[in-house]
Each structure stands twice: as structure tokens, then as C-alpha cells.
Figure 1 (spheres, rainbow, N blue to C red):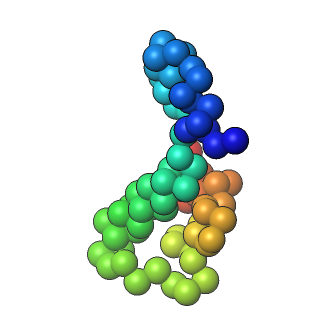
Figure 2 (cartoon, one colour):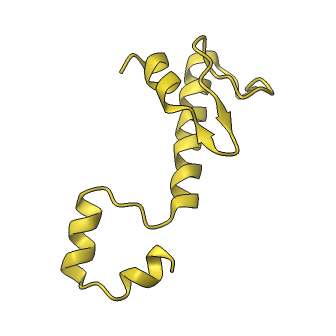
Length: 80
């Protein structure tokens, strides 16, 4: 079952509570937005969007690939 079909069985209050916790209903869209935000950060830092073909966007090799972002290296890159 998809999250959206499951959501139709929840009350509005239940949906709101899940969303308040940051629940992701559409994982594909969520991943796309995460990668988009990382590209925005890259452009702000380097002034262009020519990400190397290996997906590395920083000195700590933050990797963007079909599976998304390597979060450990992303956190190190951001200093978080």
C-alpha cells in the first residue's frame, strides 16, 4: 500500500499530527526536493551548477546519486 492510500483511512487530526512530526507522504518528491536544496547550496557556494559527474559537491565528497545523498558526508560538509 502507498502512504497516500493509507492516509485516506486516517482522520484529519491523525494526518496533521504525522505532518507536524515531519512525516513524508511522497518519498520521491521529498528526495527530489532534498537534492534540489543541495544544488541550490552548491550554486550559492560555487556560483554554478556544474556538479562533477561523480556527484561530488564538496571537498568532503558529498555524493548525490540515484539513491539520494550520502548524509554522513553531507553533515560533515555542512559542519552539522
